[in-house]
Length: 282
Image 1 (tube, helix red, strand yellow):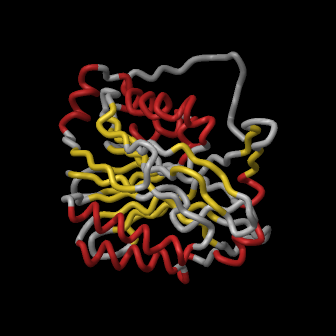
Image 2 (spheres, helix red, strand yellow):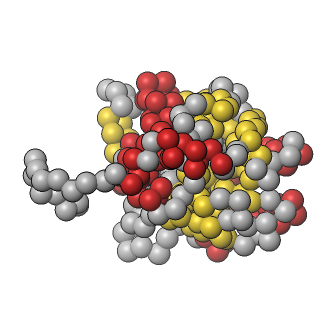
């Protein structure tokens, strides 16, 4: 399977972002990709919750989702929409950060809501509280396709290896990590985290990313790291997109999953243990 990682520099207007996204998807298809992946928040990045409330839509009315479903059907490809910011009917009004796997007939084959929220103090001037605007998901997802079983994650999830182990033990052979990774943490941790998740699970890891400076209509903006990556199950980097928007291709041989797991079968070596304390999760 040839995969195409779409790297974007979106602004905060979904309608303006969509033609750019469609153009890159078509470029990937023209270069032979049968599975195309876009980054986290493909429809737009914004620091303003009020602005997001004005431009986000519920899933059934989202124009980006509908257009990409139509594009997948027209091209006859599998398409991962890394994630979309969507309105929900939650009482507290928070959004969903939702990843979609689209089948070649244009239908939604799987949905995954980002579980781990980016609530961090990156620096004195960069503070993020994703959970104030987005409500976390609660369900891990492995999707069946004719070419692979796909575990779905989003961005900050990559720092929580237990999720990836669960996906691999649940049958995943490929794990997707669409991201809008911060430029500071990305430079320090992005590649290392992705390679670790691939090595630990014996999975291919596909991580399409946002890149560069993302302008906002309020005059603000943020920077993301770029470097969309395809990682093999043994941990080697198959493709690195650098920092420019565009399409990066990689060819996956699923036999490498069984090969890596056969050499180091750690997924079958779990043992129970006690201490240092009892922890049942939040």
